[in-house]
Each structure stands twice: as C-alpha cells, then as structure tokens.
Image (cartoon, helix red, strand yellow):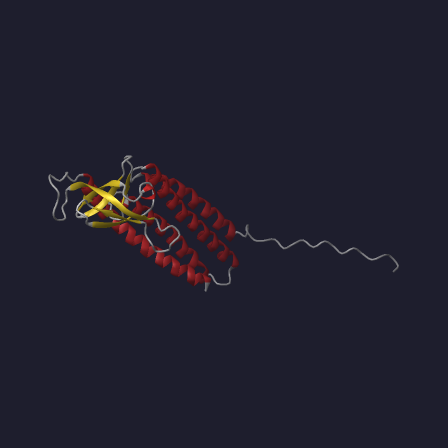
Length: 246
C-alpha cells in the first residue's frame, strides 16, 4: 500500500509539473509585454495594453496571516469614490505597511492593478502582476517533476521486486533523495526571488545541486543493493558461566 501511495503522489506531482512547465512560455511573453508596454497618453476608459499610474487612497488592508485559503488583500479608493479590491500573493513589502487613508499609486494594465507603490518608493506586484510568474512556473516545474520522477521510481521499484529487502531499501533511498531534489528547487526559487536574479539563474543554480543529489542517490541505492545499508544484528554477550561444581 505504501508503494501504491507513492505512485499516486508521483502521478499528481508529474501532472502539476507538466502544467507548470507548459505555462512558462506564456508567462514569459506576458511579462515581456508588460515591460515593453507604453505609457497611456490619457486615463484609459477601457482595458488597454498601455500602462497608467493612478493614485489611490487606502481604505483597508487585510493580511490574513494564519488564515488558510485567504489571500492578503487591500481595498483602494479612486478620487471619484470608486472602490478597487486588490489581492496580493504575499504581504511584503508594501501591503504589510499600508494604513487607512494612506496614498498609494496603482499601476493599471489591461484594466487591472498589477503593481502598487507607496510614498517611500517601495513596489509590490499584485496577484494580477505579470512580473515573476515565469520564475515561479519554472521553479514549480523543476520541483514537482524531479520529486515526481523519483517518487515514481521509488514507488514502482518495490512493486516489481517484492520479497527483496535490498531492493526495497534502494527504492527508499531514491524517494528520500527525490524530496531533496524538490526541496532544493524550492529553495533556489526563493533565493532567486529574494535577490531579483534573472530567469536563467534558477536552472543554473539548481542544475549542479541536482547533479550532486543524483550522485548521492546513485551511491546510496547501489550501497543498499550490495547490502551495505543492512542493519547488523545486535551482538549478544555470552552469559556468564555458573560457579564450578555448583
């Protein structure tokens, strides 16, 4: 049952990884279109591909920390009194500092607020913002695909080698190293986002680390097949002999 569970997890991860990989190109094109968009000559009355900076007043800001399924959000008000509800993927660096009646600037693109800037010059992408999505999709694809492949191999292997403890141990090594592959991809994505590195930095950093993990996976799996990871039976001390002539 454990092996079947790993196979099911692997299939889900591979599906998510394939979906993320298919979105990388579209996300990259959307980000490039946003960066190349011209400034609107006047306030756009309909959704437009030009960029317009609009001043808003903060009505409220909700971080929703610790609330499952609730995205951080803010309610912004135009000078005309019209309200805009904007959600964010995270709380930093602008949303966490928002106060009611504070003035902020919203960048509008295709009829949506894609970025918010405060009076101190800090800026933050909203959930509709196109910047950073290619990196997120690529990092998700690497994490899910690498972990999913390892989980699939580690789940199918014991099913094909039933009754072989060493093969089961080798499959376990593959699965645990798969967790390392996926976790390393997530950490790489976090480092890229924190330092604002370009898209190519994600595979450039993760690739060598993945090779090291794969080398370790191979070594541990071969060691398990040779029996080097077998647990030796506990040594039993001889019982002391009774007194002579008793």
